[in-house]
Image (cartoon, rainbow, N blue to C red; front, side):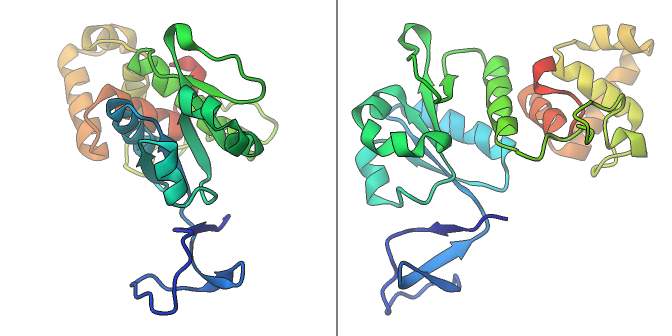
Length: 238
């Protein structure tokens, strides 16, 4: 796994911290860790917090840091982030910093202010939650060079979800619960799920309750993220 040097303000010899310093960077002591860090740089607090919440669900192993301005980012650790989610205004005001980091940069935009950028991914923050989750998941999948869960070595997709083929996943979802989960992510209501699977409405409600209890996820958006990240449904199928 790639190592990231964090808190790039180099540690003085008198610095005391519980984190072990395991090597040096540029000849000076530096803390290293295997957890990737992601920066969100946007002046809108609601946008930043909402995006932070989604990213924490999609990439639970990552540390998400929020900055309200480019100056705050520069005062922190500007070179040590795996990805930068940047407001379009900040991006255009500081292109000299972000252009060399183009592969790591995602520009936040939306509405009539959608920028035309070459080679830089954009994320429309004004779209509905379902579409936003889909786009973030696609960006996340794009960053995986070894493929996405559920893909076969030849690039084809299995006819069954990878965990379902074994009868259960890490949270012991049954095959029927996985079917219900997939239909939930597609936006079907309980009655539609019952009709689709030819089971009673009461049974659907019971399955949904079991899914929530096993996964600890109550929101449809959270269930959608779980289903995509575990290969039960492709992001394009949301």
